[in-house]
Length: 287
Image (cartoon, rainbow, N blue to C red; front, side):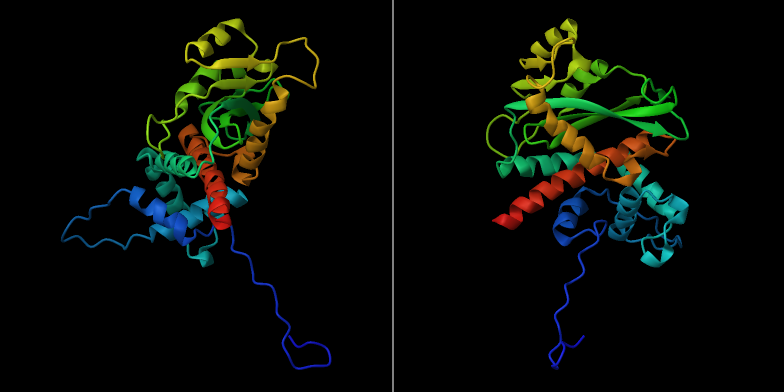
């Protein structure tokens, strides 16, 4: 395009990279985690689709929320069924969990994790097809739904998640969330595993669970029912609400379409890994 009254071309802004496209730095971290597939000799089989492109297809579904069978073939990511199988197989092999733990370790090495405190909360989503880890939701007129339970560190970086039915009380997942936090290395000495303080809202108000949290050598700060709003644990709990908002930025996680709970939780774990990678990439770009 030419400028008015002259022949010099006007510089146009470069098109931003699409979020489901995996850059070289992230792929360098993912590729060593993928299991090696051994082929049987003297057997003619179709060439397996490229793992990097298939992962781009999985991320495309995660970001856009499109149905597997509608995945555009012109993108070159393979069929929707191929992407679904890879998501399932990689989840069963523990790839997504190891990727999340690897990125947490790198964040720790870069001094981006703060284990002085943590916060927990949950969010409800509707489960359109039912399945395991679903139940009638008390906040959605009894319709079938699920809950995402999350624990984050002081900056809002997700450490672990669990998936339950929409009718489960939040406090029942308090101890499973603490136990789900993986040992985070990245520096010398003992790996990080337990925060010093834990903040939660009134949904976790129960003396029995306060006692259980203290047994992990964690000081609980849980708001009590009947107290006024505007102070107390809410000053620190907003970080987990922000992390849940980031997780639901992925359209596939706003509504549960998967009947299998392991497939949906694989999406949740992959989403947490992407959030961690964004934090790490931003820090690396500033250096």
